[in-house]
Image (cartoon, rainbow, N blue to C red; front, side):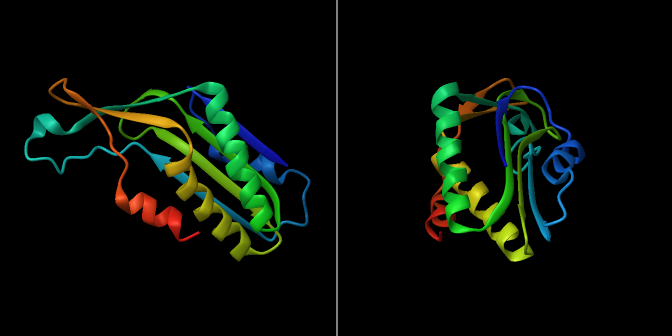
Length: 154
């Protein structure tokens, strides 16, 4: 069972785990990644601290890309189920951005598939991220070489 959702509203991690595992006795391991908006204060001045993060996307294109990514994970690992929920819109520090859950008979498959999914979502799903600073300025976030390197390991 695969569940994919791109949505503005927050998600309930416990409820999503319950949906994925409900009535299943063949699951031996769950992989879980929760991405959260962090308040980045590493900039030179407090005015450049993150006030909000906005994610934009093209709905049908984004869902199709996530479907391809989850299908690749299911091809590589023997997954019993998979959930990918990605939020879009404006989010504040501390709010959830993304949830990746995988279920498998064995823990390593679930953990590896989860790592694969988040790495590939970061670089292969069409989301555009804009950081808004305390001073009201904002910038579109460029892709990072470290994200490309993480994806390339798979």
